[in-house]
Length: 497
Ligand code: AHR
Image 1 (cartoon, rainbow, N blue to C red):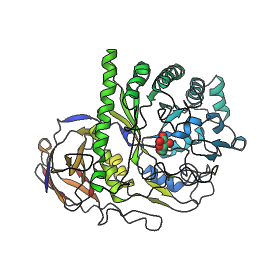
Image 2 (image 1 turned 90 degrees about the horizontal axis):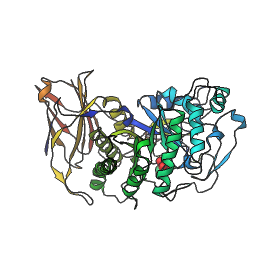
Image 3 (image 1 turned 180 degrees about the horizontal axis):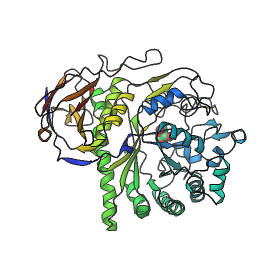
């Protein structure tokens, strides 16, 4: 089977906002304790941060990391996580029914984020708390000095303000599972007033309002419209959350899930623009897909025994097919680079994550690590909207699913074009011909492939090297045309100059 792509310098869609390669760390399971922080681990530094995790995360070049939740944030008192560690209280954490030791809090996370070279996307608690705690937290984190909370930060050993720029106004406030869930009107009003107060403390911050916690929510779209109607002038982004799984064992349908993401993004953008039209506003709301991933164990567990400290939770093992879906979702994000400015793969370590660790033991990389790393490292620059032809198939939930899912990014500085491509065909290779008409003669720098005979193959603690990318892809160039055979069920990165 054959497919074609036309890539032209003039088909500019948008600059990629690097923050679309963001991730997320919540106080949930072993993400914080046992993941990024494990004093006494052989690789731990003097602050207790695992060195092996620092290294694996640095290699991803993650520009921004959302923290501290997630559902966790809706019951979190940020004051419990600052000041001398010995004096911090143990809290009953009722989002996940665990005991939170508070040994990692805002300041430690800021230190850790600096070590991995990421910005922090901070979330405030709009479940059990509200305007007051939120504006105090902005003052604590961002105000230089001379006020109660900024001086408290200085007394805690942090003279320089953290300068967190991006703030989430709560988390999934439409979900009945959320501590302090709200109606759209309740939340819209609260988000608006909280945003005002936070910005009056620090006018430089950017604010993200909660959209629906999923496209399948019965209030979806109406929630977005109502919330924005009540907060339009005071927020900058609206959030989307999307998780996918193949729990019914239908791989062709699973591989097509990025079409759901395409439609989800398009409909949230349309809803934002409806409110823009209604308000006759010049302002455009951008999108933050601040939780997305494959999540197979969703809804299966709250630690069986309550009030454990950092019990393992949602430690999904990712297969090649999961990595292909992650790759397709990354391509979907890039195809919407004009509207989606931030996105966080949820989560980063141990909890539905590309990186896994064993307490006291080694670290290994899941299949999903690789498409995420390739996109983050090579997908910087301008998205060139590709004209694609591909044979198609129908699946249970979708019609006209192209076997080829692809996008191209032009890095003008390096004079490089990178094509990211997934072949969704389960049994046949896909011939791809790329017409790079405006670039002139082209050379192939690298054709990296993630593939395996068994689409259910995964990397595990015992066999961490089962599914690894290789550079033996057969892409070749002749003049301004590139040809490649994309192996069946594969993720491909073709770098051209
Ligand atoms: O990422 C795991 C959980 O998924 C988050 O805590 C919540 O926001 C979402 O439902």
